Amino acid sequence: MLDRARQPKIQSLEHIELLKPERREMPNGVMLNVIRAGREEVVRLDILVRGGRYQQSFPLQAVMTNRMLREGTRSYTSAQIAEKLDYYGAWLELSSGMEYSFLTVYSLNKYFPQVLQVVESMVKEPAFPERELQVILSANRQQYLVNSRKGDFVAQKYFCLSLFGNGHPRGRTVALDDYNAVTPDKLQTFHDTFYCSANSSLYLSGRVTDDILRETERVFGTGLWGKSRLRTEFIHYPIPTCKERELFVARSESMQNSLRYGYLAIDQKHPDCLKLRVLITLFGGYFGSRLMSNIREDKGYTYGISAALLFYPGAGVLAIATEADAQYTGCITREIAREMQRLKDEPVAELELSMVRNYMLGQMCRSFEGPFSLADAWSFIETNHLDDDYYRRALEAVQGVTAEDMHRLANEYLRTEELVKVIVGKKNTNKH
Image (cartoon, rainbow, N blue to C red; front, side):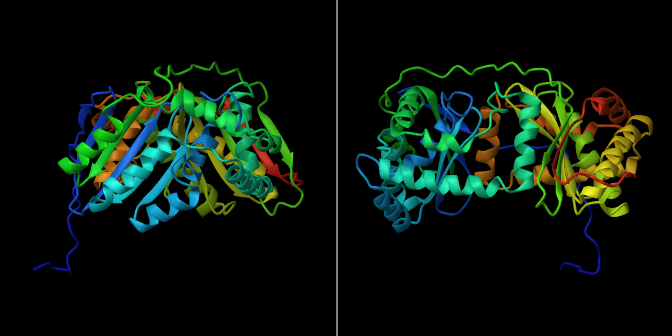
């Protein structure tokens, strides 16, 4: 019997044995990654296409091509696609990132062939109908106008522009006129170039049966499909040196100022990256972090503040974000610099470091708890150009990090003098 009067023992995470996908190269050369896990009669199919914002020739070309896949094909109208997916209990997700575009569908095993038939039409023969495109663009224009009145949206926009410049895909921002320039022909061109068997990989996860494998191979693995026969070569974009360290964008109607701080950091392949993630988590990456304890709990300047390492192809960014009353802007800036300096000057106590370790290990456990999260984990490896050993090294970095590591990394990578500061809202009239 479970004794509920006694606290259960805390178990440390000693090692990770991540279920590796069964990698099968199908007859047409497309890689199929199979993760057999889970008891429910449900399967998920992910189609990864090597083509995103870094490859597009026009603003919105990648994301709108992906978004329009469900809006009509040569075989189905948008209404028929929606009706069929709903009838078979399937769930569809479409998204586009820096270097990849994604189609994800969840299906009951018994209806997988019928769902796959619809997905095949979406991927291989989208029609990009003008009427549906204009409806989507109209909705997106309205959302853009709404977002443009939000301080956090504007702050993030100018923060990326300040770091990367408008010649870099991450620094380029969408303007309202860009929605007027989207045409079916531009979307068809992007689709013809990147949506093809030579440029795709697939992930099947869940209760994958031999019948599901055969059906997937029949549809996406037996012959070449798509108009292109070329595999995308990823593009390296140089990042200009940031010259302007402070930017203020006036928003007199803002109830709070939106603040973004940060600078370019190391990328994911750097040897220090995994242990630096521990330092940044301690600094501002969870509720008990230094920034939260000081600026929220002790000073009461904000409801929340966070710091994170963000990674893009070939680059990393240390980013700090918060919202606060205009009168506290200067105080928050000083406290951020003070916490950075404390980490440089004072050793981290073992109790605090142990708490951060446990938090990060718990997050890792939650990331691998089911077949679909495993699919996310392995597709992350592919889309970030990492090796299969990444998660083992990440675990060892968290487990083995020391106070001496924190001190060294803080002095090497916490560079107060390089902080770019973007403020959106009202001018701070408080002189103190």
